[in-house]
Every structure is written in structure tokens, then in C-alpha cells.
Image 1 (spheres, one colour):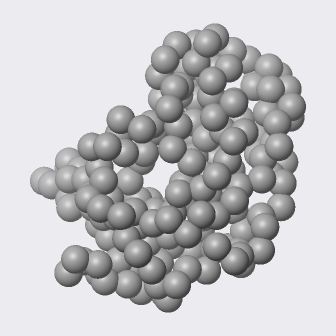
Image 2: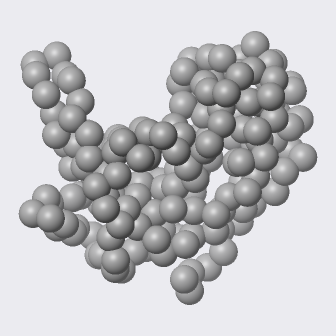
Length: 167
């Protein structure tokens, strides 16, 4: 894929009550799909904010026991430079809301981010297998939930994946 390289991402800070996310520059997140796209009859809206979720909220709470200084020190030993792949996937999930069910769709792009695998491998050894098998990705388009669909690990991706999407 012929896109500018994303700069290295400095430590974003840690809060045990929030997901640990790596912000991505919106200016580097253009896709071949434009600002709106329709896939399999579903209209998806372009997100305005882009990030990679390193640890979801549940993982962040568990990682808090490892200690923020250790989390940061581990983070800073790695090169956090995401590389776009141009490989897209359509995800679907039915979420429960206070008023019923919400059909949610996301179009994600897989990323190459070896540091994420290394980071979570260390946490997996220290804190348990819940940190195994990350899926580095960025969500570009959503329908239903404006935040998209969480993909904490490969097993979740297997459950949520509808199909690969070609540009």
C-alpha cells in the first residue's frame, strides 16, 4: 500500500478505567472508499477519530496490577510505528442496548504493529492468557455504534468477521 508512514507513537498515558489506545493521525487514514461507503447493502459512515486499541477496558483494569511505571517502561522499549496493509475486513455484531438490540457493522483495516504483539506477550506471561493474540487494526467506517466493534483478540475476530473487503 502506498501511504505515508505513520510516525512513532509516544506513550499515550494510562488510566486503569479506560482502554489504552494509540492515537493515529487522521490525515494519514485516507481509504479508497471515500467518505461514505456501502457494503453488502449496509451504509457505513466514516469515523473522524482513529486509533489502535492496545488494551481494552477489561485488560487495562487487569494490567493496572502490573503497575503504570512498568507498563510505560515496557512500552518505551518497543518501536510503535503502525504500518497500513490495505487489507480490509467487514465485521458485524448485534449489541444489547437499554431498549433492545443494535445491529453494528465496522470496516477495519489490518495493521502491521509488531510492538503490540511483543507488548501483549509480556503482559500475557505476567498476567495471564487474556492478553494473547492481539489484532492490530484501525476502524475506518461504522454503522450502528459510532465507536465501532471491539476486537480484543483473534478469537473475537473469528466470531465477528463477515468477510474480507477489496477496495
